[in-house]
Image (cartoon, rainbow, N blue to C red; front, side):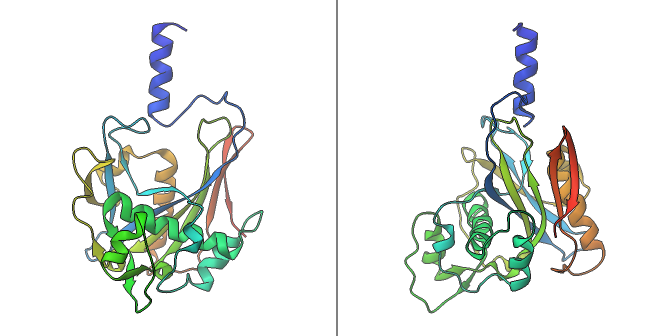
Length: 249
């Protein structure tokens, strides 16, 4: 491969557009949380700027998120996920069982706290042993609270990519943030800056195309009033080399 071709290939990878000639990889469950501040005239969403030296999307603005951990479903909660959210997560094929639905919602909360220091929890009399990424909750006397989450969309990475994820995109109002961990955002962290930006503003123009699709869905739903669980949930996936948008049912 020539130097020019190698440079172009590396550029594609850094943009999250890996060449599609890799063996088939089964998508791994992942969750993303989009926090929304509706206190002003125009809704704002929280984005974090990735470190310039990370391999995937360096210097880009992203939403906190990551793959589901095997122990997420075992984490005690201050409240269960709503029956409506559980039903939305179960839609599609194959059906997502209740334990997996909880894992997805809890993963979104865990990743948000790990990457931004913002925790969605509630005071609880239950003395639970929370360790590792959940220690900030334990220190604050909180248990994670997924009851305020809404499912906005589901998306699967195209076949042929080095990493593939079956991602559920959640949203929650900023008022659900009950605890802040200091020192999570700094010059050597995965996210070096946090910014609340208005929907449609400049930092959001540089997002991954799929993330923009999800934001468009969120914007449309916010325009109709308070978020509802009975709104259609889009499912973005690739078939025949093209992106398809279906509605989960």
